[in-house]
Length: 248
Image (cartoon, rainbow, N blue to C red):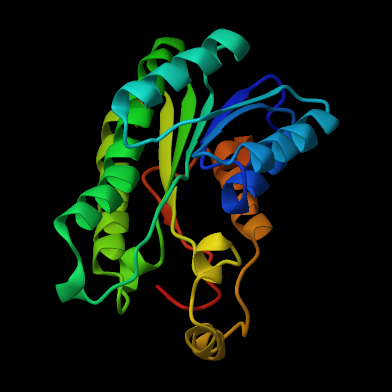
């Protein structure tokens, strides 16, 4: 029970990597507040799984690109469960297009969800972490931030910005007792990758040394390492479980 008595806030927590991480944290003793975007039925099911593990759960529909909404949710979660110990910044969006076909609106939306959303959710929980001299922030990037990808120029740029933000905040936060790190997953079986064309998906799998997409639980295991007591020497790190898609 590595996280006994702690409170975790998870964005994009109703399904995929967010859900798997919520369950992993709950299994180790944490209470979970998570948000999603208009995914109530799935969120209810995830919350039920958390409570079945003996932990408290709450969820709300929140557009993380709306700074006022993120601050309100963080405040509500802290009021209900106590100060946030762990932030898992996971909410994401993608639009696959050729570089020249992206509209300004699509660009703004992708960047707002990934970069603005993560920045201000972290800002919402950070002061209370500093006041207590402890806390953990984990930002979800992508292996595409490390290598790029066809038809993903905006997504890759936004995810690269997350890594830069993680490193910059780590310099400020670590002396205050707050650990900040990132995870850059490779291709994982989630709703986002399910939208890939079957031929593109199979070509991607064939090119991976491990010969398969990852499971959300494998990313959750990385998050648990960073959030738990064994992760104390990771500072501004970017761990990338990616099946060999990027080796560095």
